[in-house]
Image 1: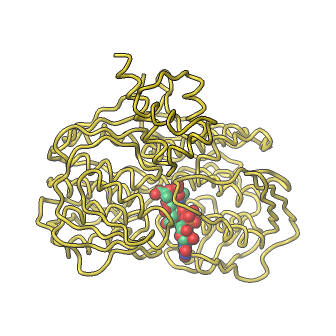
Image 2: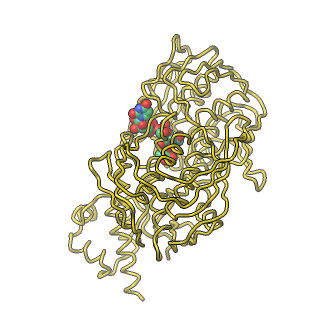
Image 3: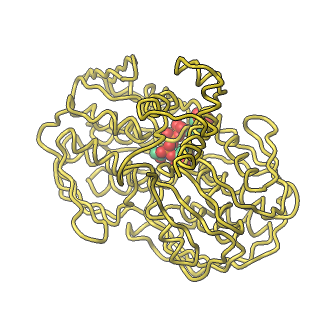
Length: 509
Ligand SMILES: CC(=O)N[C@H]1[C@@H](OP(=O)(O)OP(=O)(O)OC[C@H]2O[C@@H](n3ccc(=O)[nH]c3=O)[C@H](O)[C@@H]2O)O[C@H](CO)[C@@H](O)[C@@H]1O
Ligand SMILES: C=C(OP(=O)(O)O)C(=O)O
């Protein structure tokens, strides 16, 4: 028993080390020990103290062992089961976090309906609470009330929670209207390689924001007399940068023109919310936004963020890889149209209902039913583009789908440095995924999926893709440390179980 325990800890350490991309010698160097000692630890042949485990966890930036229910969550998947029935898409992580940041524009009370109860939202709530914003879940439907204080206590900001999110960067836009000097930690989020924040700084400089970045913290100073005197042309058509520019423009006394804006789903939801706050935004859905700012916003508002196209795509992919008939209800079709076209070209048997409106009154939804189909690899490569193109976050799901199709599919993720690399994790489940270069993988299908045990890749979508492979594989698979999945999906295991999956959650020791 004791030996078995050491072997399990050893495996956790090995997986965490491999995820960091370190050799045994590199870990040994960080611990001040020898490579052979690390080798013994990983094989479970060495007694180790809690102190050593803690040091290893620190060196690898990974919580190896935790006590009680707060420890890392893992999933045990009994795969090879067909799904059936219907499942609803939840509201999107990316809109919910942008709207939470946007509540900082308003002195009044904001109610957001059916907010995704996910770790990313919890982290942003922790940051808001730490600076004095009062937040409260008001019912079991996940409706959330947000009330900012008259004065924010920005020095009390919870940097640890903030640093775990990408979204906290969207505090910059609202805060530049509330403080002349403040600090914000560097943004985190999925580990996808370098993710620039320069376009944010370039856009917000036009509103008088001056940022010095040192030792993990942005030191921000605002010169209120500086205001945009001509159009703000974003250097990238990014989602969060467009949102930051919108947030800054919302309380700017005048009209701001933003060009090369993203018109993606979360940006549109933010524009609809700004309209509730009395801020008119012309051009929603296009790449030129004209924002009619309102210097003081003090309104009680009630808003329903829309459904998540990326969650819809994840659920469709779950049905495809498990050869199931499944209805995905409340799918925001406008943000999935190209994905659906590609899937139909690949031979997916897919039905959709007539469109209906999301609770925000604007976004078009449909229910999609997919049936088991013989898929062919697409002729052309799959690559993302800013909306309206294949959504960057949907690309990883094409890897799982391509692995279920006959033939070779080239997937080209030009956007992120690391995300395509994580897709090679599917080889551990039996898929033929070859890395051609850091941005391109060739997927050779169909796959005879096989069970495995592994750590979650440190990026949300590739982590879910691995989970889908495990659902397709006969036998029992284990996916360790799924915080990254919980960042973006609410109770995913339970919800998949409700349509026939068998996924158990557990924690170590
Ligand atoms: C909280 C949130 O909403 N996160 C989403 C948002 O992150 P966010 O908007 O922060 O995305 P990033 O700024 O990281 O941009 C994504 C990447 O695309 C590159 N890029 C982007 C636009 C462009 O015109 N040219 C270009 O090269 C950037 O350099 C970067 O490498 O958008 C990403 C891209 O849709 C999504 O993956 C994230 O889920
Ligand atoms: C990359 C993603 O998220 P974030 O921007 O929050 O890291 C994602 O949602 O896939």
